Length: 65
Image (cartoon, rainbow, N blue to C red):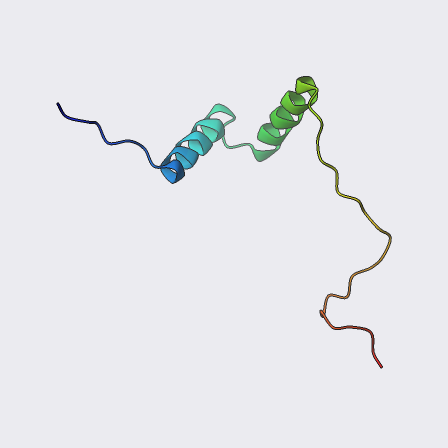
């Protein structure tokens, strides 16, 4: 009895990504639009981060003394 090799999770992700890309001819905008339509149709809640009006300091430093 020979067991067929199973696909690793990473290989499965790559395969599915190729299938999706092929289905939309590699058009990233079409892929994103389809995903947005499927999400809206699912009626599932989507996490939205709380936003602030504060600007972040890109330097990573604190306030000057």
